[in-house]
Amino acid sequence: MNLDDYRGVWVFIEQNDNKIEGVSLELLGAGRRLADKLQAPLAGFLLGCEVKPLAKEVIAYGADVVYLIDHPVLKDYRTESYMNGVMLLAEKYNPEIILYGATPNGKDLASAVATDLSTGLTADTTMLDVDVDNRLLEASRPAFGGNIMATILCKKHRPQMATVRPKVMKALAPDTSRLGKIIEEKISLNEEDMRTKVLQIVNDVTNNAKLADAHVIVCGGKGMGDLQNFQLIHELAETIGASVGGTRDVVEAGWLKHEQQVGQTGETVTPKIYFAIGISGAIQHVVGMKNSEFIIAINKDPNAPIFDVATYGIVGDAMEIVPKLIEQFIHLKAEKGGEVSYV
Image 1 (cartoon, rainbow, N blue to C red):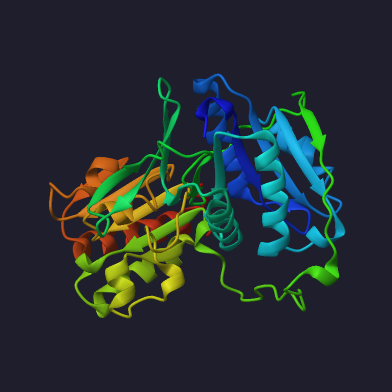
Image 2: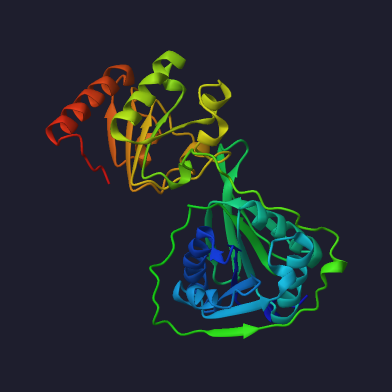
C-alpha cells in the first residue's frame, strides 16, 4: 500500500427521510479544520434515494466535493447496500480519512467498511486532530474506564477512520454562497439480491424530550447522597423548566433511567446552561457535557475536577445551596409574572 496515493478528508452524510443528521453537519465542521491543516479537499459522501438536493446543503456546511450515489435500493439504511456504495467510492477515490457519526447506522457502516478495506477504526472518538508532517489522524477517546484519554493512530493502513459522538464537535455556520463540486456515481443494486428487507420503520413516539436536545439541564451525581436528597435535582429542574440528567453512578443506583445518563456511556449534551450538582467531574462524565455554553458546578470539594471545566463554580453543600437557588428562582418568576427566559 502506497500511503501517498490517498488524499482528502471525507465525512459520511447520514440522512433519514431526506434530512441530514446533525452529527454529519458537526463532522463537516471538524473535517474542514482537518482538511485545511492537511491542505486537502473536504468531501461529503451521500447515499440515498432522491437525495441530490441535499448536496447543496453539504457544500454550504463546508464541503468542497459531494460524492453522490442515488438509487431506490438505498432509500432506507441497510448494511449491505450502503457498504457496497461506500466501497465503490473509497476504492475509486482513495480518501485518507473518513469520519462517521457514532450513531447506530454510522457505527454499523464504519465497522463493515473497515473490515472490507482492511483498515483501522477508532470508535466513539471525542477529539480529533492531525499530525500534519506524517498525515496521521489523531483520534482520541477515553480509555481504561474513562480514567485516561487515549490517542489512537493508524500508521500503516488507509483510509484512517473514526466514529465521532454527536454533540462533541461544532458545525460551521452554513454559507449558501459556497461553491462545490457534485460527483454522481452509478451503482448496480437489485432489491431481490439484498439479504435483508426493510419491513417497517417504527419512530420513537414517547413524550419524553431527548436529553441531547435540551436547552437547560440540571444534572446530579452521587454527591447528592441518596434518592431522597436527589429530589432536589428534580425540584430545581421543574422550577426553571429544565431537563434532568445524572451520572453513571446515579443511573446504576436506580435514581434515574439510562436515557437520562450524561457521559461517555450515556448522552453527549450541549445545552446553553448545564448545572453539575454533586458531580466530581470524572473524565467519562466531562466528555459528555464539556461543550455546554455555561456550566454551573456545585460541589463541596474545592479541588473537584468539575471546576476545571465550569464557567461558574459554587463551593458548598448542595443540600444547602440548591434549596436557596430554588427559592431565588421562584421569587424571580413571581416578579416576572411566571415568565422567565434562561436561554
